[in-house]
Length: 207
Picture 1 (cartoon, one colour):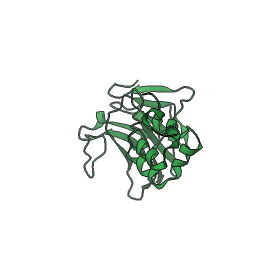
Picture 2 (cartoon, helix red, strand yellow; picture 1 turned 90 degrees about the vertical axis):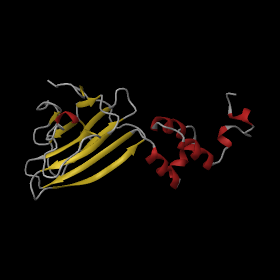
Picture 3 (cartoon, helix red, strand yellow; picture 1 turned 45 degrees about the vertical axis):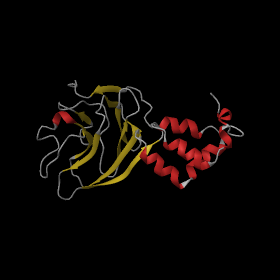
Picture 4 (cartoon, helix red, strand yellow; picture 1 turned 90 degrees about the horizontal axis):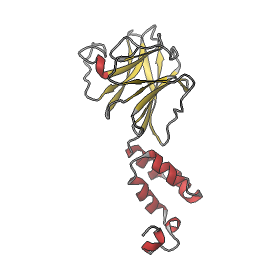
């Protein structure tokens, strides 16, 4: 049975109601599958307006974007990801206590990505007031993390990231702060690749 009509659904798949469609979407595991289903026709695309749709999307593991804005940092402003096994103690730097090999850091005043080593140059430096984001895509093989400054994709990205991660942001001065402006799941990756893009593998020493 290859067609919905063979299951005695009069009119085929598109004759089903919105609640059945939402049930189908809730069983999907990848955001790409949801996207392909939505663009079948106008009827399925209207599902994005249903209150239940947002809750379903939030339950699907796939692509997540984490964005912050820093304030009064003076110098130290860093965003990154960490293996979910990391434990961060109060009053300690993120890279201390054996965590250096379990995190990736995008350092604002240097524009470097660091992991196990002091870092690699190529990404843009960023300042207070700018929107800094990391997008983690768990649907690709290998899994990857891409960084953005004011929605501009940065060339250096990380592949082979752990299957479970944490997002983090770091400041140092007492007067400094950051605001999380986005923490959302995406149906489709925003990262498209830019000129000069270079992948750095998690767990390796970068040069």
